[in-house]
Structure formats: structure tokens, C-alpha cells
Amino acid sequence: MAADGIERDGLREGDLVIITGGGGGFGRAFSLRLAEMGARVAVWDIDAAQGEETTRQVRDKGGEAGFFRVDLANPDSIADCAQQTLTAFGAPYCIINNASVFPRGEVVDLSLGDWEWTLKVNLTAPFILARTFGPLMIEKGRGVVINLASGRAIEGAAKGANYACAKAAMLSLTKSLALEWARHGVRVNAIIPGQSLTAMPLAATSEAEMHAQAKARNPMGRVGYPEDVAGLAAYLVSSDAAYITGQGIAINGGAVMIP
Image (cartoon, rainbow, N blue to C red):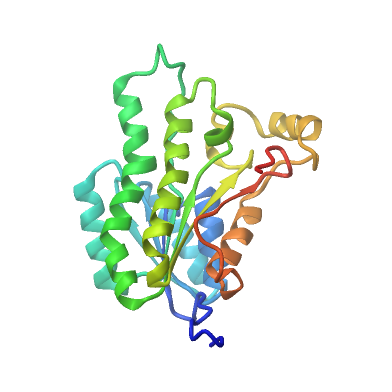
């Protein structure tokens, strides 16, 4: 406790972390890293096989985890999953809004359905989770939310206006929640990953092409890995980050430098 009487809070042994899209990529890396720090992990994913595999890997390393199947485009599914999680584990200390969809297409070709689906999963679902679990965090006077944004929120995206717009809005949601919840001891930040070896970019290119592009264009000469981003999340949930809220922190090897 500091002289001002305000505790420098961080993740404690047994705290629950909810990770959407926890079945693979960043989500699996988050699950494994935070479980190593003593967190219990609720893996939310629409893909049961992937979600169960993440859960198995956490348990194999001695951690505590449970899988909860959810369709983040469906508010009723989110509500059911939230109740199942509360029944099994109780209220969360941390929510990591990691899950995203990215149907690609130029604006003139993108269907209204794909536009709306992108916003539902990438933006509305985090809003619903904030509205669902935020009051429980506020009641406890402690908590952390980490939102996954994207460099495309800053640069824009050809054939990806839906994704770029949703991620830009995620940055605004992060700042707004941080302003509303700071006085309650709840911190809200965003991670802005650059090109990383996850399923989403690999759907549009090959791993070899990603490595070649990064070597030619990235100041550090390499792509990112899920473990890189998980390390930043581990910091943001810790007491070392107790004075950080409302920030969008880029992790991209210097590809996009945010003032």
C-alpha cells in the first residue's frame, strides 16, 4: 500500500481470466502465459476442438482451465456462456477481448451481412462483456480489461474496412471504459499487434511469405509471435502496470510507431 492509500493491484493467484477466442493463436498464448502466473482460465471459443485443446494444454502444465463454447455474434449465446462461467468459476479479475473475424473484401463488394458480423464479434461482443462483468469488477474494486486492436485501426485496410473500423472503435471503447472505471480500480488497455503468425493473416498468405515480407519491411526484420503478445498481456495484468490505463500499446517490431 502506497502513502496515498491506493493499492498497486495486479493479478493474484487464483484470479479468473476470461479469454475470448482462447482456442488458438494469441488466445492460446494468453491462456498458457497467464495460467503460469497463477490465473484460472476460462477459454471462450466457438471452435470446441480448439478450445478443448487449449484447456488441455493449460491443465497439462498444472493450471486450472475450463472451456466454454460461445458464438460472440449472438448476444443470447454470450449471456449463456457468461452464466456458465460465473457458475463454474465466479467473477473474473480480467477479460481479454481477443476474438476477431475478418471477412475480406473491398467496400463495394463487401456484403452488409459480413459488415454486421464483423462489428458484432469484434466490437459489440466486447461491449456486452463489459456491461455483463464490469459491475462485478467495480463491486470488487479491482479488475483489468485488455482489448485486442490492430495496426489496421491506425493505417486503414484495403479490402478490410470492416475490420479496420471495428478495431478503431475498439480503441475508443478502451479509452471510454478506462475513463469510466479508473476511479473503481479497474484498468482498461488495448494491445495493438502487428503482423504475427496467427491463423487470421495466414488465411491470406503463407508463412514463408510473411517471413519474407517482414525481413524486407519490418525494422526488426521479423514477424511477431503469439508469445510476444502474451508477454505484453502478462505485464498489463500485473501490478507493474498498476498506473497504466486507457492506452493502446503497439507491439509490431517498429512497423507502426504511434506518437
